[in-house]
Image 1 (cartoon, rainbow, N blue to C red):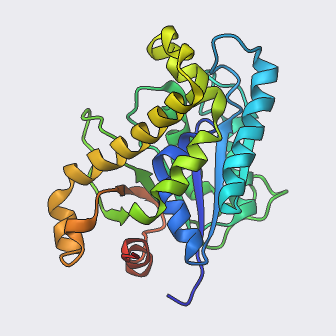
Image 2 (image 1 turned 90 degrees about the vertical axis):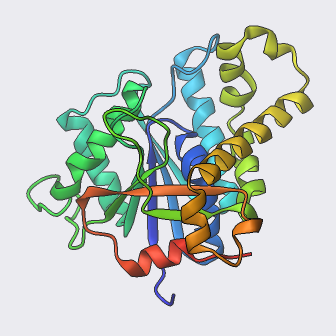
Length: 271
């Protein structure tokens, strides 16, 4: 593909984009495309001990470190973690951020999700989808002539409807990079998530914690691979037996329809 594309991967929290589309991001960057991560909240609530302001600053630094591994910008907006609402002010903040980057494709989570911030982020992205091209809204940031296509990353929620993959991306060659990115979010994967699971896990050695992170990342990619076995074998008949890790994406009904050219570029197998 000669044309270089721009991908904006939007999560509710610093680390959401990495975990759900980081392998695809790494693959796209290797091919010369431009990727940016964006967190709508500052992540200030995700800890058992740190004060919110200090945690927000720490999570910005962690996000920047993750983005630096790919050479990508990782923007963190300043909306409070756990209190995100799809209101007009937040929508306009997000509209400006999307317009400034001018992406061809936006990737985010689906509207049905366990976390209120995730659901709000999905609604905000969809609410922005048409308004991005309306000049009188947020006139300080020029309206887009060509609004982006919108994709949802894979999840395992079944109600009101299960995820339906339109794009399958083999990411075996980028799994190590994804693990390195995830390890940058120390406040989450070395501390907060272990405490949520069982506070006794905080006593693990750093090496043991790093092993758990790698296992968590690979387990998610492998579950996605098993779930769409038939699709993988159809798309990659010659390589299917070697593919262990995939990320998958579903087209949103909102936004510009994604082109066959972009789908083919995302699904192109690279050893």
